[in-house]
Picture 1 (cartoon, one colour):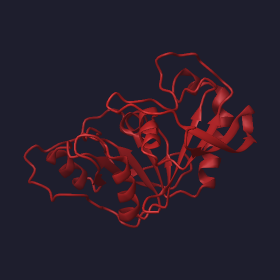
Picture 2: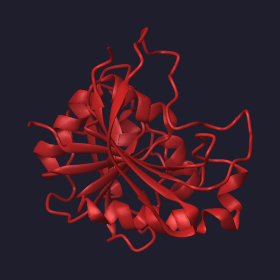
Picture 3: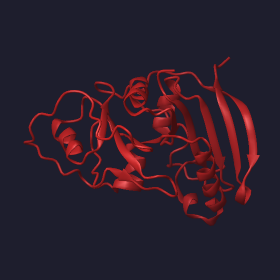
Picture 4: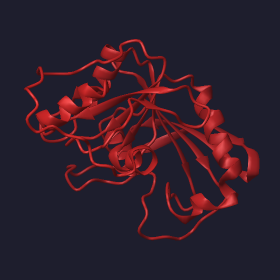
Length: 239
């Protein structure tokens, strides 16, 4: 296979939400533990999130320190570190994230080298900024993200064999619709908050074409700490 094995690995509330007030309750403590335990069981070399998730957790909506007069950078991709043991892949099509480091530390996971997924819309100034920060980047798509190309480059350039796809909902759905998700790994916390303006596990972006529902085949069910449940599904064709 010319791309990584991709597992959409998420923690949700009972009502399918992946963010919201429920995340601040003690009811998610057991599920959070199980989420990290099950993530480690796949022995991945990377996990991937969207721009909003990255801003919420790592870059905190800071503006990048751009030099608009920076000399033109070489065309194509940029590999700052070719042999990292772990990668944090951030989908940032237009180049907006204000990184202050090229390493992400999260929970008990190994330090992860940052890899940005850009489109050709990302400016020369932003690409120069990433090079200055020694942050790797790949170009995948002209105006919109090409998920398939991104996945292929992550394997060929960074030797990523197993990739954990960890939202948000728009990125999850984009990869699923592109036929790139091999497995759904879902840790469900025993809580719901009923919010109607927070993101669910899968969300369709307005730029995506008409689509069909996606069916799954149950692989396993496991009870976890704090009344959580770990569900594993493989993806199958809709009938």
